[in-house]
Length: 241
Image (cartoon, rainbow, N blue to C red; front, side, top):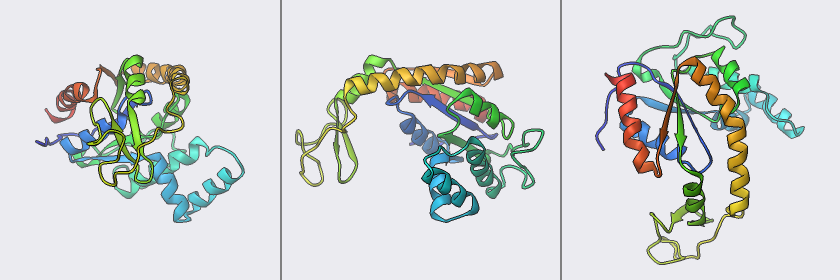
């Protein structure tokens, strides 16, 4: 795959319903534009807990008590990661009156995954570090439900197949081990319809927030392969020209 160089930093959030292919698009963007890194709030949290950092111990205590990790704690984890990479000034704090002045160097580009999920979280992130592109990925609900109906997994390895576009060599069997493929327990249509309805309810205020900020861009397609070229062109227009 050909790669492209960015000329300025891209600070990006991908928003899309479950099953729309956010992970696929993020991977393709990082291959196409190698200066982009992934910053995953979930990964940062797990690493912090595993390494028993002060924030990790605090988060673990919160989760053991049956509570959600507070937004402020997630923001600190994200900010610590950006400071460690020297992408924001080391003196930056989540309690600062003004947002950080992030580096505009192309190597300071990142896709933020897992946060924010709500408009309230987005407002808190704005107060710490401004993103400069929010991509709304849209695929029709009937297409997403069709993908899920065609999805089979090899549970021991995590390998995923789809009978429509990534079928196993032998029907119903894993390519590597020959073991039987299964359906995920939550891959039934009604469960997915509920998940998609919930996403619509929570995502619209988030998208409205970023639309008012002037950083929202929407792309629609029936497949990842249809969306990817448009995404590349938009990144090149915004950050590479």
